[in-house]
Length: 492
Length: 117
Image (cartoon, rainbow over all chains, first blue to last red; front, side, top):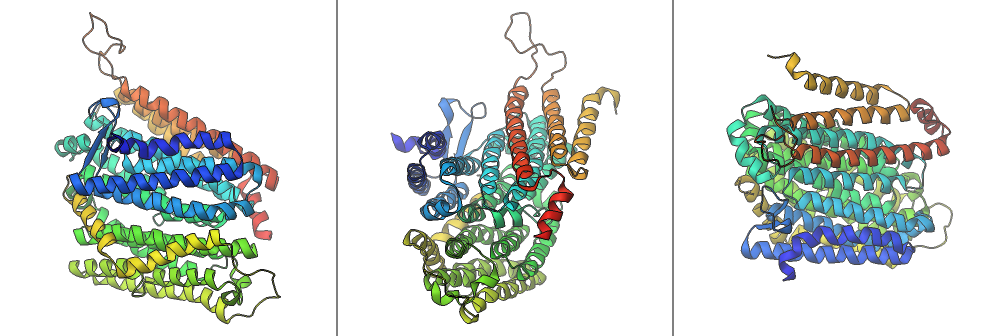
């Protein structure tokens, strides 16, 4: 009985928990609720994936109103996979959040913090699971509005300006998406994505379809932080509370990439998106520039959270490069990197969170000798960093390997060079940190050494996941290639 | 092309570009939000005008009417208006906090203060 209602529960549970969190208000109760609800969502998404493995695509209609008139949730491999990433990261990071948030946010606003967290989770899950274009916009705004709040809770005053800047750019992006959806509705008279895809075939060769596609792509480009629309991201991630940086870096942009893929492949179809429109050329150029320029800028950052934020922009470049190849192999690489990047950036931001908890700073200059004072924390950073570079036996290697193979298959050698150059640049900025932490001079004796277990355990969970998925790829690469097939098949 | 007959779209484009220009060019944080509002309002009009069906009546079921206007875009845009209000409220709340922290709502001032740190 309950298994039939899982798609609704996936979104409804965190949505209902959010106001409950507001009522509870006490920090511990609010945290516990957030953790439990994230865990339940994780179980639901695992169950959904299991159902899809067993019986294929799930169609869920709300209140029994059949699509295209009612709002339908449509779950296949692609979005079940993204749901799993989002809920898993939320669960792991929420364990970490307890101590980290307690040290960074005043007690009386912690209840509000967790309320915003749950709303953000609701939004991200809703975007991923829904099969209705307007529903997607509403969930997008739920997640965006709550993430502006989460970022503004950082304890530096720059967090406020970062959140404001994100609000302006995010709203422009969301409004562009709204215009795009509106134009598609004018053309097709439907909001259900599957229905829209079928009706678009007849009218694809019209100016309205092309304009709608352009608005959607640019709007989503802003949300993804695709170069050159990335300007909101570095400050937002650098000044947000540590737990929020980890949560958003691992999920928010990933979900936006998923939406772009969904519209490109399932709604417009690959022939239109990458054939009739010059998107492939644009993406390959922007992706390459993102990889090279953002990695270079990352080398010169002193604030390590900012460094990782620039590295995120570079990683988005890799994701986009995979899409631009327009082959199933390229798409598999993108989806795989979606997962692996969530793991590595999650681990790295959690390690920085531990450092921030102990030192109250994440500036490179304060890290001297930290490798000996906080060996476990730096261990996570080293594993995450190696994964970011793409060394063999780490998850990062697997996705880079798939991406290089896909580029070679198309014969795009310059892209291969860009990927390798990006890895070398990553090596430089990761090495700077490792060098300072292990070879740098220790500052005056600071009392205390390691971060508490409740912060180290989730960080290590992600670090171990980086190693595990670097050696056992059946699960991650298997699902990613299935999801790529689903997107490519045109039958979402 | 019937230029005058598409006047609603001309208004949409004019409003949209005005709003967009204000967001980009204005250095005052409150004015940026006003620009954002204009920008969003233009999209509301785009949606509302697409619901009009030629010779369509108000979409309330009556016996002597056969053509109705499409009510769905109006419903959609009600949701989008709510989202817009929430965004404005949050944006203004952030501006209040920024003014408390920096003593200014001018972008140039704020940048100068951050750099001097």
